[in-house]
Length: 353
Image (cartoon, rainbow, N blue to C red):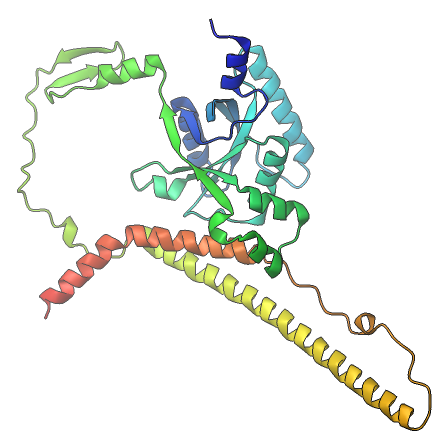
């Protein structure tokens, strides 16, 4: 029998073991996918329930949250408390370990998400955010990402100090706002048995899912398609709609980035203008004092020059970081999916020569 000390270390009751991976139950994945797909194109959120065991955050249950309204914050909190109470009554894990959110085309880097995740990690140091991209999942492979805010970003966000000096000192860029954790999907024993029951290597064997039994098909199996049969799909030169939409989003985000750069440049010009006014005032004052000294008059009284010429405060660089991170996401997605299309275009270009 394990001792109480061993159990405490495994369950990490004192919260000393950092999280290094996330384990999702297959049922949790299905619930997240179903909720996000039913609500597309709206962005939806939900709660994750589970427990962290020896550095692995095990998510065993989830439930969707109601759609946000202008005055529904209290209603959402009451709904969450009632759901957790109901889960406790039916002996289901009711420990909140994070939340999930849907996204489309990888567009999730915004201040609302940052604020929500910051509050979660402030209250629950081991909470995690699961991002499900519905558009990328429709391409054939489910897209799930487990994210947490880095300690450096948490410190700056708590201080609300996103100046150029603070970012440089903390060595913070758009690439280390989040830390991504690996995700594993766990199947229960019953589900694993069902998958083995459904799996068959013989195409002439059909499966009856109603009774979970197999039987031989009496009808002749259709002739398999030859691997040498011509397929003209690979010659389609039309641009992938997913890539085209990513390019549109990328251009819009670059416009936002250009606007942020313009705001920062305007601040720099304002600071330079105030510094020139201050320098000119000090030079005139120095010249006047020298003239008064020659004529035997008393120098001018000291004045608070900094109060007279106030330098405008530097705008927050948080939006710049988030926009840069969003541009990086779009570029990675375009680089991933544009390869086959560009290869076909170059091949056709060589054939036409």
